[in-house]
Length: 360
Image 1 (cartoon, rainbow, N blue to C red):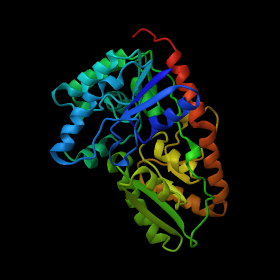
Image 2: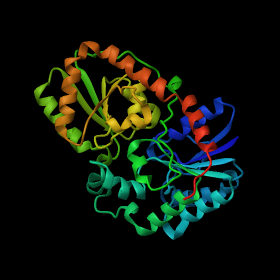
Image 3: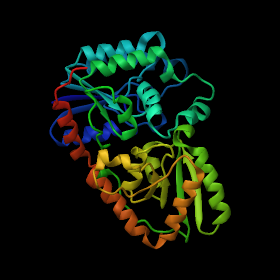
Image 4: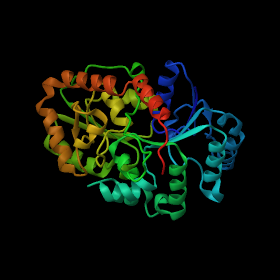
């Protein structure tokens, strides 16, 4: 089977591609690289150039690449907004890509119009207000634009299946009969070196990756870190860093004991899974709704909510178990290897693609 994976979020499609190839399929990723993460793609639709040259290349390269983006048995789109919205460029390009391929599917991963409206109405908490305050900084949220929602609706109805990666995005598409059960995020653990989780210099190293401050809830983490550094100056070392390409970021994670993912999610994203695969203790989304992904299997993630106090309490809980860090880290790695193995997950995507579309 020939498969086009269009767009990239934190190497989700790269790992899925690796799994599909190991199963004997011809799979390629076409993307702009997901910003500063610089995740390599088989078909590069972006540009590292700056100024007018970069702007021109980012507009021209996807058009030049259209012949490479057609003729596939399956095209999977990671988000409704992959390109510039100006002049209908995004919608026009995606319509052309859909017209040139056989079956199409949409991943529910990250922000989209249905997460922002239906998800916001359903979830007890989420990052929405913090995104507006810290990430958009007064700019209009594109997902609240009626034209963007209209295209998101058209795309959701046009594809044969909607494949959410977690509960948070699954609830947004609850009105669509061809929404499938959440599928785990694929992780190629063979490319992530496991290290025994041990203390360095007697201190517990706690880390939070700086990305989108509102989406990740970084201001809650900063508040929690201030408290921890004041009360445990000789026992805890806290740090927040970001802006690193993925290989450098994973290397940096390898030096930590505890990784704080995002505070306002019910579930774990790619960043949390990478940290688990490295053998770290992870604080993030671990609400009961994750049974949709894991059944009765326990998650080795310590649940936190958008509240500095919940972060402090969970770090204190890890401090109390510091003698068990090695065992906790081993459980983290085993969880990802069992539930997120890229080949097993690729098999589940293949099964989802094979299902007939239900009437909308």
